[in-house]
Image 1 (spheres, rainbow, N blue to C red):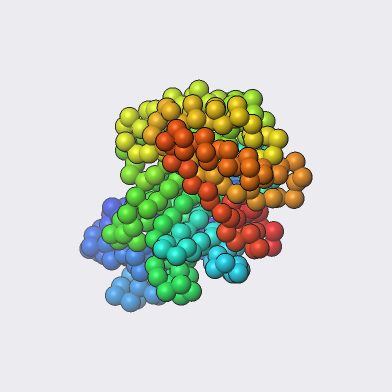
Image 2 (spheres, protein in one colour; image 1 turned 45 degrees about the vertical axis):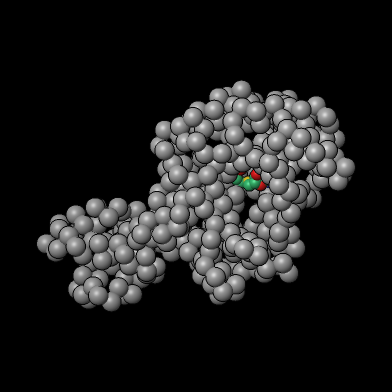
Length: 346
Ligand code: SAH
């Protein structure tokens, strides 16, 4: 009996309304339950105090609410918080709260593990176990919002899909989660405050453009030279830079939304003038900005952050061409919460 119970949050509002009609109740009951599930964050049917006991009993017999639980919360000396999030089947993902002077950003996971094989990323060493459901993504955001209010006295202001996994390989669920995050019945956040970061899956970038999504796009570029990019991000063999370029041109034509390129400069990998020149050429294809990310070592001597001189060379060359460039310092390194360090060490 129990394994027949369905995850109630996999139902749309209309499906919930139909369910209530089907049992001879009012369709409106579906709206009430939907609000409990998504807006009021009910963890059990007994929380739903304006629903009769008999109806709650029926819900209990037919459905489950699969809620995440924050198993472990680690706090960095810089205010960053990392959550180890336990899913209903016992698997764990991580999400991070990153506070700055003006904003609080949630960095959330979209998959358990990752199917990509970026050589510099700790998550890539984990097998991809499964995609996260929309509610599992949404719940991570709700948990971080709560922590932001508790520890930093302000609500969450931004969300980045830069935790574990490749969001575009779990596109439908990511989109559904964002729908809930932005909906009035959900968190009511503006999509402009949400960034989806991808290693660059051309077909899916075009699909997002066709879907007229309103959130922002970031692409983990790291090199604009095919051979080098393939050596550090092997899937580049399948999705070469020419395909990525074509998809990004398509994205911009449809959305008019500027793209962010994430880029780490490593010693003896991409620290030469020709690497910079290639990046400048790539930046000429569509309006964009470049975020130079600090490298977070993952216990592999192969990758070392380039010298400040090499990074300055990038900054000067990009700025000379009028390209906006930001240097992103790492946060939460002491608790392995920085970019590329999420790997369930605990
Ligand atoms: N799969 C998505 C999102 C997760 S990774 C993507 O590739 O964009 C989030 C960002 O962290 C990416 O830009 C990724 O390239 C970067 N990253 C991965 N490992 C890193 C490391 N060890 N140090 C710094 N940044 C890293």
